[in-house]
Image (cartoon, rainbow, N blue to C red; front, side, top):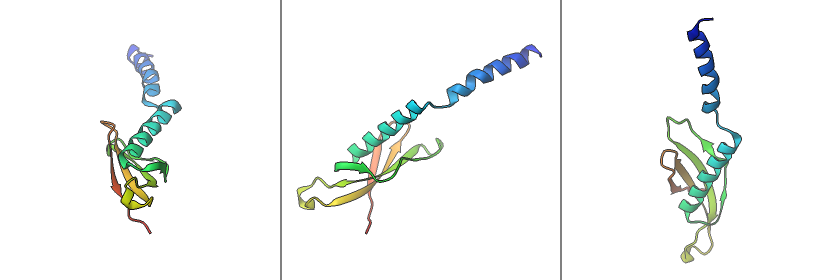
Length: 101
């Protein structure tokens, strides 16, 4: 085996574990998205309506549908649902109300 082949094999061994995320890292990401999305909705008693919808890094966002109770007094405790987009680059979340019947 040439020196180059040995070096390439060793480099490959060290590269692959770095590319994979641990279960703890995924759980931390899920928690971060959930917290950011819940806060962005402003709902009382927010709950995830779906599991986290993960997109490829080229998209840059993950999504979560959140349901909860509108906090405004004039809404009289009405339930609502919002689509949350979580920006993976800066950790921010934006929401848009979803109409459902």
